[in-house]
Length: 239
Image (cartoon, one colour):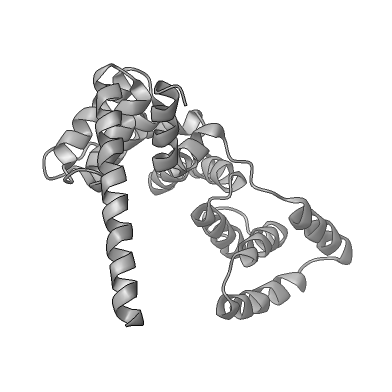
């Protein structure tokens, strides 16, 4: 009986979500057709992810193009993703365009774009640029960028090895790690501590305690896309 009731509740929950997303899609589509760059980006994401409509990457790309042409940095980022290979079933990969478009979003403060352009620069041998952008993304709490920076500094991969920076990045990574991961991390931290003076260890731990991610408005908008699209519709409806 309990299992049957659970299935019924799940069914109604999913049906309600689907209905709400369909309504939101219609509202966003209306705003996008009126020329809102933000709505055009969100409409692209709805098509990209199949939210409130059938997934259609070709239509998503069209709306990302429109959004970018009217100046939306998130639209530029998604164009960059498509030229980097996400849209390879209907557009040719163009690495130069991918970097150009992602850089626009990176300069505007989008952490995903910053991490992506860092990887591109690293692959092309522009190490200083890569590290600069990974640090920008890490400052916003991007987990992947933190791990990459830890790996680079702990192993001295194409940059001078730095036990202090390695320790700091790894301590911050430790915060959101599982219990099993923490055991592995603890061993690595102990090894790094042996290379540091007492003062360096005190200063590093103080740095880690005080550190907090500082996400830009654009990053918050990007990672909370569905909620942001709802806010856009509510603003239009005077709510």
